[in-house]
Image (spheres, rainbow, N blue to C red):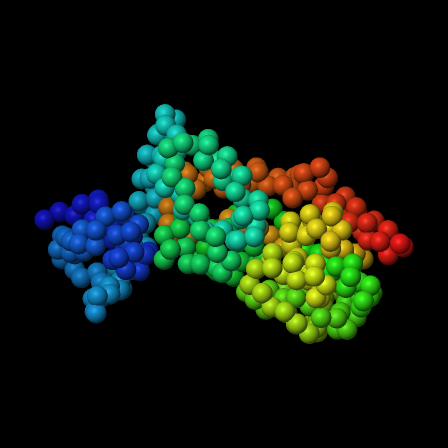
Length: 325
């Protein structure tokens, strides 16, 4: 009995997905077909590749070794065939991604729609989720992540940077004043983001020699798992909030929020596209990431008429005018 290429592909998917059920979903086939292909591959190689118990399968050492050796070969084959088909055909198949809720709903929708319009044969699935999800277990081709990346198992490509701004409502400013320094933040209440530790979120640029973020001690009055909700709480005058510029920009222009510390910069963050190290980076993923980079180039979608510095200057001028009034 000889092994078949479809058995190899199924084996790779079972290892990456972590179960026969998830692999069957990824391959758009039945669990019985996946199980048979794995059994056929083991029979052809005369080895057991998985430990089976209570309906679960886990790769053993031989399976992990085979996986690490065979994935680069399959990737090279896919790149060679895609290189040929790219000259004659458009993108096809399915592109599944996980994106953050606020940034995804406000800015990624039109960008994804334009990519879909350019490639009518491509199926696109978008999951909106603020919590970092497992790309392999969720069968995602890529994800969009905000801020520092902590997962060494993922490759990443930087899409753009964004400023972060400490904001509050004019009402809060009138009632409690504004902090004149980072130390004065301790006298104020804040609205925090549930998915990030406050000590990691509230970080400010340090011009000192060590360059480490300056620690901030504040009382968290409200914690939410969505930046839009945090912004609404700040507009209602309930505390200071540290928002990504792309979420604060419109409210700053309208005057419902003002910069609370225009003279002090919070640490900027990065928007990145991430994808698994071991999975073949398909042409559709590479093309889509290129599309994201081009679409998020200056001027950013959240401030199309001015650059980031000018937009902040305008907001600060609005704040000075409101204080003077």
